[in-house]
Image (cartoon, rainbow, N blue to C red):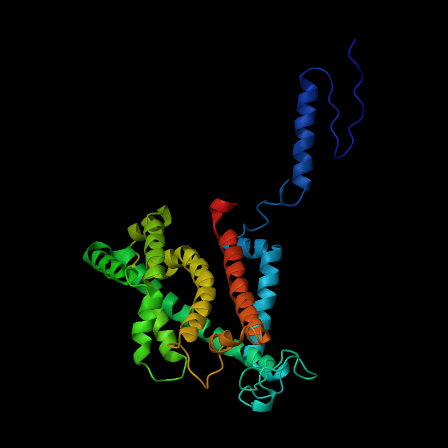
Length: 328
């Protein structure tokens, strides 16, 4: 004698014996899914799928490394634009009677060998480092991305010529090249240093952009656009560049911290920025000879430089993890 079938309740299937039970269960599951907006994972037709950039932003907002590094960088940018917000003194106002003295009220970092306030010089030094890093990164990304993208898209003799040129630049040691090229520059502005970084930094971005464009132009959507008669400029701007620019952004973000460290290295060696420009590298160089008697002169600018470089590298790592689908 078959068992009685219990009354059907909304949202619940009662499996009876025989084939009818399986049918009731399937129908109930289908009705439940229809009443759930977006399906079981929230990916129904009524919800648009996220793009690469929106998906990356969704991951970045939940990454504590990105949040911490972004806050540090935001603070550096703010004090670079408005250093007087946290430092009221003049970085070039020095008093030799206070040379190498330690922390005092109103001067928490003490004084350097010329009697200048170390705290004020550290704050104003952020402007120089951030300016050099950002401008050099933008120049490298634009020049290297443009040349590498064109080489990857057109190929042929232009690609071969650019590859040989990049090989020549890769053979030049960066620090040695800076010692040779910047030793003849007498300007105390940041532009010769930025120009040197762009000159020797674009080949790396060029290689990354070339490989990314070669990979992107082989995708089906690019081939479909070509078959429909799209011009080369339209394919580059509308289809290839948005899908090939992510690796360039990742490498450029990480390289920004490297350029800041390179500026400090060249300034320490005496061929980068020159006084009266306020720079962490210049302060580290002048404080190195007093490290035993007044270590505070070296500690604070070196610490600010290390934190800044680390923040940009951490930001680049977080962006790389968010934009690289292989790491998901």
